[in-house]
Length: 492
Image 1 (cartoon, one colour):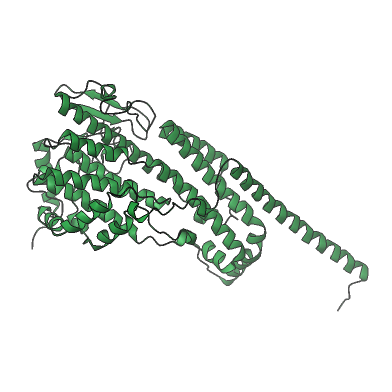
Image 2 (cartoon, one colour):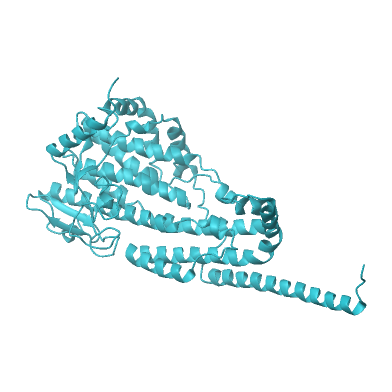
C-alpha cells in the first residue's frame, strides 16, 4: 500500500481543517441569523414562546368549563341521520323554518322530530347543568400546551355535540311553544363556544362551526313572533359578546410558538426529528433510508434547520400581520390582499426544509372560515336589532343607520370589505340584508349559487352574496319534501 508523503498528508489535513472551519462558520452564521431574526420580532413585541400564550386559569367560580364538560360528556350521541336540518335553503334567499314543520322529513327519515324530541326531553337535567355552567364568564380548559401538537383535546368532540344539542333543543322548544326555554337554550348554544378560551386553530374552528349552528338557530328563532324585546335583547347581547378576534390571532401565535418548540426539540432529539420528518414519506429502499438518516442526524440539525425554522416563523408572521390588519380594518379583503402579496414574496419552503413542509398549516382556509363566520355573526346581530325595531316601532327600519343608538352602538359594517352592511326594504314589507361575500363583489343581494360552489343552493354563506334568507313558501317546502321522499330508501 502506497504511503502518503508527509507534505501530502499535511496538505490534506489543512484542507480538512478548512472544510471543518467553513462548515462551522456556516453553522454559526445560520444560527446567528435565526437568533437575530427572532430578536427583531421580540423587539417589536412578538412573543415567541408557547408559555406566553397560555390563557391563565381563572378562579373556579368564574370558569364554567369543568361543569360544562361533565354534563356534555354524559349527553348521548345523536346519529348523523337524525341531525335536525336548520335554515335549509330551498331556493336562493329562501329557507325552510324547521320548527314550524309539524313533520320534519330528511332524505333518510320521514320525520326526525320523535327521535330529536325524545333526546331533548330525556336530557333536560344535563341541559340545565350546562346552562348553569355557562352563567360563568369563561370556559378555560387545562390543556397540556407543553406537549405542543401532541396535546390531547378530549373535550373538543363533546363541545361540538353539546353546542349542537343546545341549538336543537331551542328549535324543539319553539315548535312546542316554550319560548322562554327556547331562548335560554339558544343563548346557551352561543355562549358554549363564545366563552371558550383556547389559542389553538382546531379550537377556533370548533368555535366558528358551533357558532354557525347557533346562527342557523337564531335565524329560525327570529321567525317566531312570540319573543319579547327583552328576550331578543338577551340574544343580541350574547352575539355581541362573541369575540372571535383574540382567539383567531392567538391561535396563530400559539401555532408559531409550537413550531419553534418542535424545531428546538428536533435539533437535540434525532429519533423525534426522524419521526416528524418522516410524516407522509415512504421509504422504498435501504439506500434512501440511509441517506435520510444521515440528513436527520447530521445535516439538518447543524445547518438547514435554521433556515427551515426561519421560513416557518416568517410565514406565521405574514399570517399574523394579515389577521391583525383584517380585524383592525374590519375588512377581510384588505387582510387577504396583504397576505397573498406577502406569501408570494415569501415563496415556498426549500426542499431541504423538513419541518416547513410538514408542520405549516393551511392558514388561508382558516382565514376564510373565520371571516365568513364573523360576517354571519354581524348579520345575525343586525337582524335581531332590525326585528327589535319592528317590535318596538311597528315596522322595519328604513335604513340600518336608524338602529343607532337605540339598538346598535354604531352602523354595522360588512366584515368582507369594511363598508356598511347592505340592507333595503322590499315592496312586500320584508327586508333584504346581505354581505358581499368572499368574492368582494356586491351583486345586489343575489343569493344564487356562486360560481365554483359545490354546495348548490343549500348554504346561505356560499351564494354570490351572503343573503340573510327569507322564509320559504309552503309550495317550496312541499316540493322539497317530495324530493326528499323520492330519495329515501324504500321499506322492504
